[in-house]
Length: 341
Image (cartoon, rainbow, N blue to C red; front, top):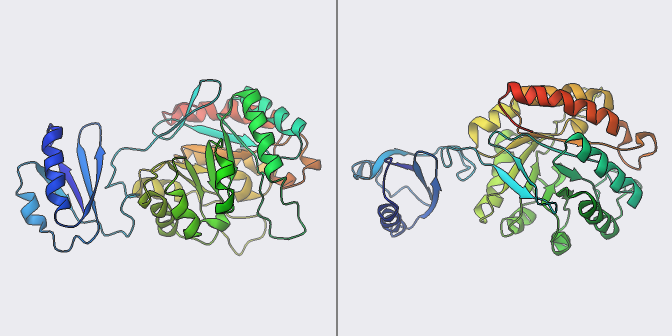
């Protein structure tokens, strides 16, 4: 249930009203918008009389939420959520609410020279965040699985050298302590419905980049986000990275329609991964531009200084030069969409 308070309602009155609601056995989520205060009721609301609430002098509107996701619902939080992160260089980077955040870097951290060189190149081109896999989930047990803790150390070294906040994937709860200096924790498509992991992330105070599973619906990805939100962590970035289809020409099928669908249903920022969606480097630029035109709040792009010799996903990685050219074009697209990179 969502309760919209009348504009101009005093904070003390809102708190008294919240106490009244909590006595009826529900938890109340408080959201202060630009023009209005919204209260979200979580729990068994069947016994709460909506008509009686409407009669209260502080209440403007009462809405029963039909969707199973409550905190992720835009009704619950009318204003767009923006994720703000300050890097070691003191500069603040943002994703969402009018800011187009670009995350770039190699699929896997391979060597110190590789990750620092790529980090410097993508920063120079305008990337706001550095991505790189230390722990890699691979379909084949014989494929390169990442450098593990060593890769994480190299990412942190690149972060220190460039000032870029880092994004890397968490695969196991046991690794969470080692991610203390990671700025955004990525949850890959294979772990989108690892509910034990999502519950644990709800108790941490770090932004979570949640990738949509390749066979999961819009509702399912929002429900996965709900697990994290229910734990108290409201710093979530949704990521569309392609869904499975009968066609094998591309690695996946990029579902651009998911962008406006997610943004209509939820206040959470939505970014797109054109690298994993297509699996083909020459398609990345076109799909990145299409994603921004469709309203995406950001992109996560694989960039490698020598894709032909990459240990992981070289066929979908673009060069630093290609990334710089793409960023120059994306600035024009962002201007059209009224966003800033």
